[in-house]
Image (cartoon, rainbow, N blue to C red; front, side, top):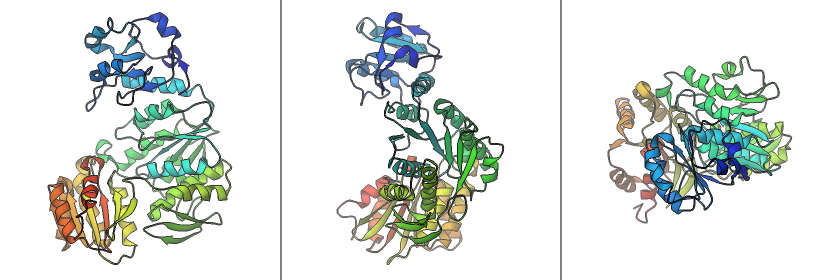
Length: 466
């Protein structure tokens, strides 16, 4: 983060308490923290209030760690003012909502720079696509991008604070599970370019319909003016809706159609995919047809920004995958696909389709956890996914979670002989160890809250296979 005067960062923010106005008007900030575990001496600590994390409880730790200033919610001043006398050198700023002020600080900080701002959103594949875009653009430009899934009202500001005078481009993922979040985040970033991977029923429990999800995602396109560009999936069923009434240019990508798509798919394997795009043969760690589509999305952005196809190829081929998002590894001769980080009906279907087209020596096993945030449509989608499992050649289905049990029952109703349901992860792992043999393929897929990485950890123990 570049050293910036605090008053400028707080411009237009509603400040309801300042213990020292002279310091407030003259002090510079060079680092902002919301987590005392990584706080450095001299940081401005923003105490975020939330259901799972209460930052005000860590003000004492922040002060002992050498924080130069504290931003707190004025409603909690009774618990904060006891620090004023003991830390006279620290400035304290009270605001109505620290999360909103964090966004305001990030927006004001970003306004200090002239750089290209690209956002990536969608129902599935946005993190992989964002990483591919970064890999491509980094061949020529200095790129800052959101780490992991830093895509909410805390993660977006944290990413922005990594920008400095040498940054050419920001590639920022935007996530949402409630209406209005994309618009809020877009107001912080004010992007010049936006890419939407696809539209599906992720978090549909908060949106009621895929049409509502499409409207939410389209919010990422609203800041784009005539000089901006919307990069859209030509094969998505909401493609025409997303491009309607835009003043921005539209560039499209896809697997088989769009302004850019592979001329030929040579191979879709477990270790890599091979395809020809813009006349260049590319071998990449992306998995499945959906992974190749994500690669095409990154390539069309690279082309727009003037990269050669050789540079784009190098970028796509440098992508190494991510833990919990399709990373593939061997365990005693069995192949494991770790997709434990997240799941929704769109991504689960894509993953099952992928392994259905892969030839293995052994059998195909699916470890499925609940797909969360589907609301009153949860049972429908968990039953619906059973059709993909039956068609996908899954020989053994291990389910964990209340709604995944619905999938198990639906598969049993359709005559699937290899269905098991578990309430306990340790019991699931124990049973899995007894079944798995060399040559088997295991796909682990579930929503983040199901913590299916515990299955991976259990399988990795020395006695994992008999």
